[in-house]
Image 1 (cartoon, helix red, strand yellow):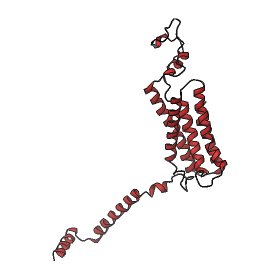
Image 2 (tube, rainbow, N blue to C red):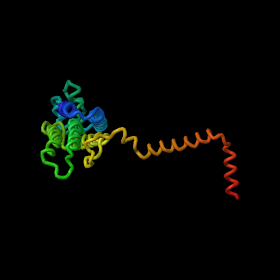
Image 3 (cartoon, one colour):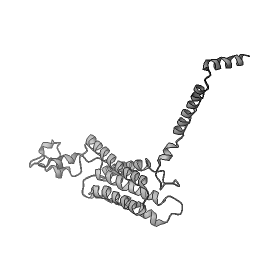
Image 4 (cartoon, one colour):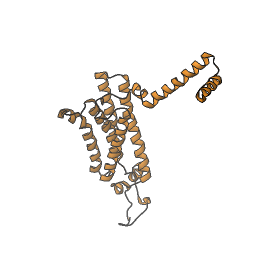
Length: 238
């Protein structure tokens, strides 16, 4: 269900926004791309951490279904488990961090940042209705994360770290394509013209043009360069 709530629904909302307002191909493309990057990167990092940590879930015993006669308060091997479904059993050791929390805050957090930028929420004297609408996806993400505590799939540390990881990745993906939310142009993504006007790129073009012009003038003049250098040295000596 987290795929529907945090992946498909934000995608459809952005798609509907694009169909109604016609923001342009570039803006729609980078917005969709930012959402997909956030979701894929979050899923990848969450799975890597889960496999590396291997922390047991709070409901591990119910997943394991220990055989009769298993001693209490004694460290035992996983072979005492009678669960036939290996997927359910193996998932019992992949608790940290919460995948539902990270995925929800990644997709819905990205959507919240996008709405904040489009409605200029962080401008002075912004009305409360815009703020509530922009932060509503975060409330939905928090409810999804809390549900993982209610059914004993995770503890509070799993959910907290998962939510933080997802929100950070969502913010990182959003900022790759959009300026800060306090910017005057926070509703407009970075354009190719903005990238081309970076000081380093323009300086490099100017240097290349500056080098090419003297070479052309020297070749077209027909004057020997060595003669010019000797003339300059004689003039300086005099």
